[in-house]
Amino acid sequence: MSVAVVLPLLFNPWQRAAFEPAKVTALLAIVVAMSALSLICAFKSGRAGKAVPLSRHPLFWPVTALVIAHVSATVASDAPMHSLWGKLHNPQGLLTTLGLAALFLLLARGLVSEGQLHRIVTALIFGSIPVTIYGLAQFVGLDPLPWITDSVSPVFSTLGRSNFLGAYLAMIIPLTLSRIVSGAGRRYTVVLMLQVTCLWLTLARAAWLGFVIGTLLFAGSLARRWRNAVLSWLFVLVTLFGSALYVAMNTTALRRPASAEGSSPPPGELRQASIHARLIIWQTTLGLIGQRWLLGYGPDQFQTVFAANYPPDLARFERPQVIVDDPHNMVLGQLMTAGVVGLATLLGIYINFYRIMLKVLRHCRNLSEASTPAAFIASLTAFLVQAQFVPNVIVPLALAWLVLALGTGQHMLSMVERRAGEEQS
Image (cartoon, rainbow, N blue to C red):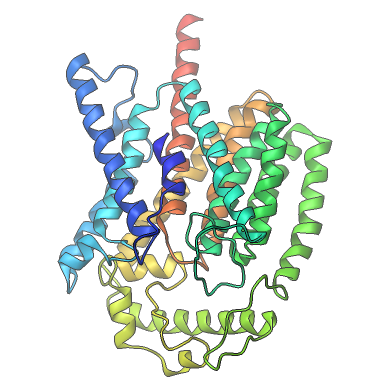
């Protein structure tokens, strides 16, 4: 619950890097507290209770393989201690990866009932309300804090940047949709309207694209099986309006960051410069991967390696003071971090997750029951889409691991329920 509610809200306005260090520290503290509580409960009861042994969990070995790959990459790194802790302003070292993996394993072990799963999803949905309201307050100019951002939108709430807020909302929206489809009440419709409005105001194209694709996957998969007219119309409307609003983002800016000369380029020029910069970063990164393709350079080494191979053409599209500390692509980032070994283990996790969730969907008996696994699929899809264009930050990453744990946990609970039914019959 604390990860779902506290992590997105937490920041420290008295620090220069106000967002990521505080959030990562909080995540690690929460994981330590969860671990201690789990050990105490196991010691008192002397047994695991209803929990299925972790070794039988379908993602236990893929997650273990990912951890081993990252540990190996850290040991092989040119700066192992830096790879362990990560950089100060956005810690993405081995310790952060271990924290995320531990969060997944603790939740996978501790998820013992559908009611518990329902409460966590509810916390995720309603935990987004203060984040969304703060973002809307920034849009109308009511933010009491004097934040500085170089984005085309001032709407970033407690996430630190508009595209990070967009990624978070794109992942939460499918969960809200699932409650509306299951007939949970009008309050979720109001929450959904706030979320979608705030998401568009971020002008985060990658997040919006993730939201559109995730929502189409959610509505299309359910409408096809259950022949639901409302979901069919939702599919059509999201296709039409989602595409139109995505196009509009390319020529829209709520604020215009000044260039090196102090002028304010048109939104179209800013967008084109961003595209060109990413293409140059990707091209340079591909060249670097070939030099250490097996285990990569180690966690959080990208900034150092890229700075030593900085492409001159990038200076035409990025300001001199901009530090490139991420390839803005999840696949390239994983290859730089842990090589083909790390990427293979990560893809193994995601492929197994989709396989499991499709199996859960096939066993659902009605639309209401199917809406939750469909939302988990859509949420992770939104994350993966936006992650191909946006740097890694802790809230979307933690949310992705939560979705992995909740989705596979639902699968484990359904297996236990089916076996109990077979035994009774």
